[in-house]
Image 1 (cartoon, rainbow, N blue to C red):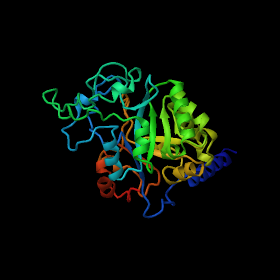
Image 2 (image 1 turned 90 degrees about the horizontal axis):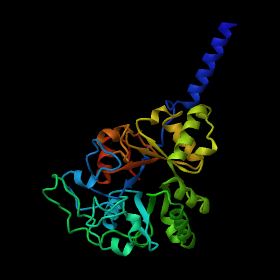
Image 3 (image 1 turned 30 degrees about the horizontal axis):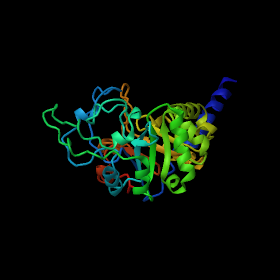
Image 4 (image 1 turned 90 degrees about the vertical axis):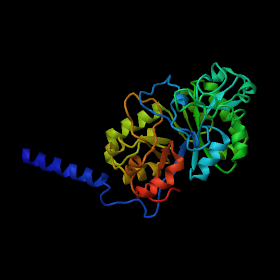
Length: 330
């Protein structure tokens, strides 16, 4: 009796392995990832000891290019470098505009002070967004005076890049941010066509998706729900409702734990209308958006990967993808 049970268990394990192994399957030869440029092409910074209150503008590396995050110029540079999608951050201001800016407050990067969403866009539009950047502990400020008037409003982004794609990040939990964006996109099909997806605060993200169900997005809650349930039953090949028709970010160091990684997992999600976004390695205590930001990270991306890759270093993406043998970025 025990031997029969053991045989059955071994047979079952073999079936599960065959259903989920990518040993005998490959991504199409010559394919490659699409790339999401986080904040456009921007100044990168030291992530050591990073927390939610860290002023990252005061810890940038020596500048190797002139671009500041979330500006029209940085977006153009990112698209020119091969980005399929540019991620940007928005705050709904008191005068009904969406300021495209990352930080919750203005004190770190700009010559202004206060909470971004509480500041009229008329003031934000005149700010020097390069004011606080320094690579040498405050001895020099290489972008001071060069960022005046460079904080765009979201409609300006849509007008400047009518044929490009954007991932919109809500920086608050205000439901009105979601309803306002959905209202704008619903009355402007051209702008809607540029929005690849939405993410960030649960309430505004869910509000946008409720009005525009054809749009995709994600929240921390939706990602957790999908991955936990998939880890439980994904061995069967079934993709449950919590993983369907959405965007799904996955840290590259946790991806191998997913049933069917890489080929079968990505194929299952794509068949369910979900795009997989490969993030950089997750490290406990790091609140930021780590990307595929080094040659070592790119070497962890599967060959001919057909999902999306998130990066903070779009200017090196083509070079490092080629060096890592991933295939051409699309």
